[in-house]
Amino acid sequence: MAETRAKLAEVDPVWGRITREAREAVAEEPLLGGMVHYSVLHHPSLARALSYRISLKLSNGEMSEQIVREICDQAFEAAPDLVHAARADIVGTFERDPACHRYLQPLLFFKGFQAVQAYRIANWLWTEGRRDLAYFFQMRSSEEFGVDIHPAARIGRGIMIDHAHSIVIGETAVVGDNVSMLHSVTLGGTGKEDSDRHPKIHDNVLIGAGAKVLGNIVIGHCSRIAAGSVVLKDVPPCTTVAGVPAKIVGEAGCDQPAMEMDQVFKGETFGM
Image (cartoon, rainbow, N blue to C red):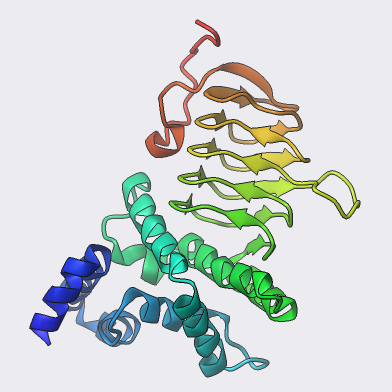
């Protein structure tokens, strides 16, 4: 068994690190032994562990844990990119969230990570034409995590949602790679037309707590949206916007705001 785990760790270093941290967690806190074994050490791969965690959270009296788990297993087998995205999300959370000290934590404890993985299954179901089942996953994720992501939204890899309370992402929204957002962010529409009506967030964007980005607008790469802002117009790349309605107040302050997670405006002058 140890030899098998060592070989697997070489193939999937993220999963290898998670299992190592899981054993350390059990040694440090034996009362969590059952939870950690069932959630991590009992499984041969990250995909199987994700299926277990998602099914445990989303199952209810209307759909059993076994059925939800079988749906997740089917999705991960048919679309390996879902697992690749989950790995990137774990690493992104570890690198950007100062409260994350182990790769193990997002898988076990962080509802932002878990909600994004549930969305990824729902999105796969949506693209497969199984839309009612996708809506079920959306509904249960909203009820369980307080995160409401439409299954048709398109979300990249390396996503970090800190605290993840009251997140709303609409049907035609697009979120690029390595985007960071905090709680109470809305990527919403501005009307009831059945059309392309939600924001397009490019790579490496940082969205502060409580920010509302509304309408079919483009948020340029490596930009920052200040906490509490209401964004109604396009945002150029590498800038900081703030206010209600949001206006450009300066440069982004660094090359990759989503990685730095620096939300303090230091008076950088746009265009200087």
